Length: 229
Image (cartoon, rainbow, N blue to C red):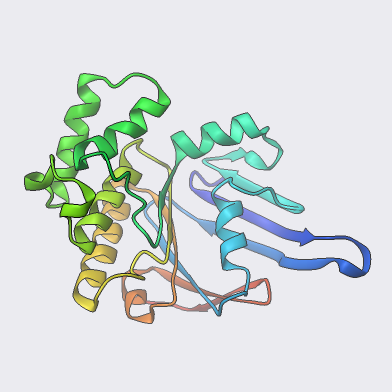
């Protein structure tokens, strides 16, 4: 039993009968703690559906998803909401920062959603931001940050609840080459250091060098493409 993320023979269908569309077909993948995996493929290949199912945002039509050993495929919506909040960190192509919150509060709001903010939560948030080179930006607002700083803040926010899984959706889409390398290198380092299972969906082949394995998705099917290292 894996303690990371295990997706076994997952399919996703939309519609019925002659109108039935297969978005994912018998997809299987296991990502262990400390592994950083990339999924590449053309637009419309099923990557977004795959990431949504992995992130407990969407239920599969068939198959099983296990997160930290738990079979979440049969969970209720309330249980899935709790899983997303406590077990999964999301990093999107847009940093999705709250415009009226400063950098420190971007992280603390995660704890506020889960309950009360404790002194140790604030200390952990400060430590995370310091690790990611944002010590001087604690009181800065999103409009005062560069693209790279926004994504680093988003990475810190994703780590705030000590997740078992990190899911990154095109995290370098809005960054130049140097900032893109910095951001993915940071994600890789945090994944290895904190022993988190991580999947990155990307079109940016320059970033594959940071990943342990690379999968290719096409027409809803997922195949191991190559070893990145």
